[in-house]
Image (tube, rainbow, N blue to C red; front, side, top):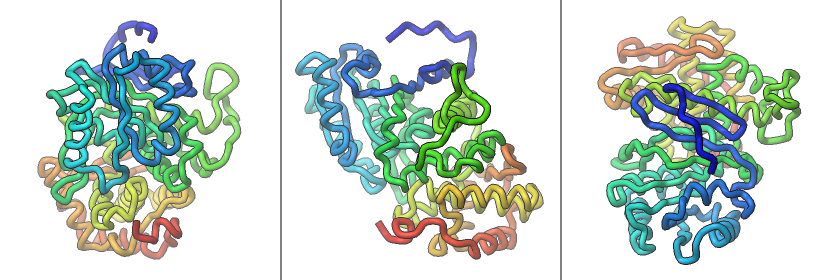
Length: 407
C-alpha cells in the first residue's frame, strides 16, 4: 500500500482510487474503489492487514457467492495459520447483541489479539454488526469493510457508525468506530438481486435530493442505472474518456456523503442533512417486522417528507412531484398502508424528537438539490401530516411481490 501524503487540512480528497477524509477533530480514513479486490494479484486487502492475525466474517449469501474466493485470497496473500473465515447469520433479524457476542467468541477462539483485524465481507448488516464487535472486542480492534451491496458502498461503507438493533429500536446500541479500511469493488453489484439494487438507489436518491441537482437529473434520465448498462454521460465526468453513468452515480453519491459527514463525524450536532429519510423510516422498518427493507423505508420517508414540505409551503408542488416521481421511477415505494398511518407516523416524529435531544430536526427538501430543517414538533401539525399521507396513499405501490409479502 503506497504511503499517502498528509492532507493539507480537514476535508475530503478524491483520486482515481477513491477518497480520503480528515475530520476537524483529527479522525482520518480512506474509502477505496478497486477492481477485483479478491483477485490474488490485487494486494490492497492484504496490505491493509499488515501481517496481523485476521478473522474474516461473511454472511451466508456472501459465503455462497464469494466464500471460496475469500479463502483462496487469504491463503495466497497471508501467512498460513494467521487467518480464518467464519460464516455468520444474515438479515436484520441477526443484527443483535447475541450476534455481536458470537462474533467476539469466534474471534477469541481464533486467537485474535489486540493487534488483530476483523474483516467484514458483506452488506450493511454484516458491516454494522462486525464493526460493533470490533469496537468492543478487547476495547477496540481494527476492522476492514469489504462492501458487497450498493447500500454498503454508498452509505454504510463511507461512515464510521456501527450498531445493532435492540429494545425494539433500530440501531439502538452502537459505537463510532472508523474502519481501518473500507473497500468497494463495483463488480460485486453484478450479483445483487434487483431489490437490493433498488434499496441502494434509495440512499443515492437521498443525496441527490438534498445536495445535488445534477445527480438528481442524471437519475431522472437513467432510473435503471445499475439494473441495466448505461452509456457514458454526454459530458465526460472523468479525466480520460468519461466515466459510465454507473461510475458517475457511485462516485458522486459517495463524495456527497463523505462531504456531509466530515465536519460532524461523531454527530455532536444532531441536525444532519444525511438524516433525510431517517425520521419516519426506522419505525416503518420495525413496525413492518422488517418486511420493508431499509432502502425502501428511506424511500417512503423521503416521499412523505417531500409531501409534508409541500403542505407546509416549503417546496413547490412541481418540485415535490419530481421528488416523488423519481422515487417511484427507481422502483421504490412511496407509501405502505400497513405502517403509514397517522398514529404510527406521529409516534415516529416523537421518537425522533426524543432521540435528537428534544429537537425534531426533520429534513425536508425545499427544492431539487436543497433541503432545510423543521426543528420543532409543533411545526408539523397533525392535519399537515394526514394531508401528506393522503396524497401518497392514492399512488400505486411501486414494489410488487417481495415488497408486499412478509419476509
